[in-house]
Length: 115
Image (cartoon, one colour):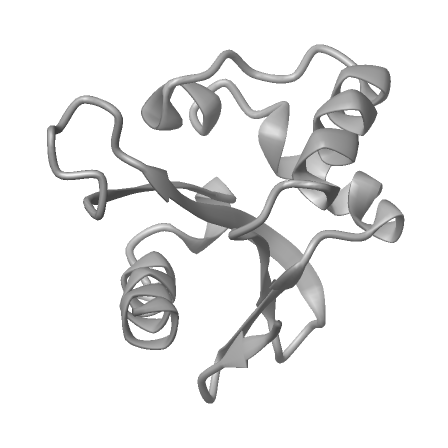
């Protein structure tokens, strides 16, 4: 399933996304903000990409003007709550695109389209 706004597209991950994923996931400013350590190699990114490809509700955030993957967003069951309908959203964005409203747009899109 793909979702989009004027600026971004959320779509399932693909093997061809490896270079874009590694480009932002190796940045030491990105991973820790999202709760994970920066990727140390393309091989590490490749292993993580393989998992994301098979994970429901895990999407690449594609900037439509460049058609490059600039981030990631996923939704899952929030196991810290008794309400099993509660979801948690995880996300990360290439530092070059911070403070432009891109992730706010992506989160809003996920909430609107996945409910």
